[in-house]
Image (cartoon, rainbow, N blue to C red; front, side, top):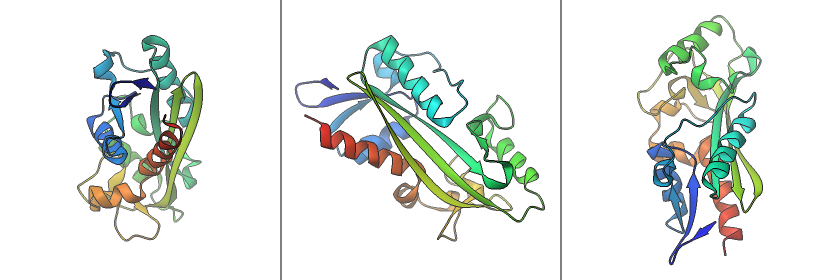
Length: 200
């Protein structure tokens, strides 16, 4: 990790300001997290692998190779048991390359029409490249696919996913509540524990 006078710097291979804020907030200013904009990366990162792990690694490798920085990248997928774990790695573009999540959710609901098994899980994998070593961190939350969109908050598939043990969809939860149980939060917390343990 790069050192400044006061903090250790690490690049998060994303332009998603929400993700950057979430990680920074969880780190409580112990590290300085930079996004792709701060290192001058304006290209779309490649995501052509067949697995969530592969996509996370591909993005981290791209940034590490082209910008020579320690970095981490994440990828997330919704896996539905009755659909043979689809959409999985194709979650963002399940209904087409325009990445419209209303269309994606409608496709899932159509495919599950009349199917009683609604079991599903969200998985996030983070790939960290630090001093030429690679580490993976995974977060998972199990739940059910609802029969209709419920709630207006959140993003992605949140309105149709209800985590086990709750009567609300992710889209009905506050950001604070969701961030205590979500797949991404679990993976990020594992990353943070690793960074805090090995941070000089």
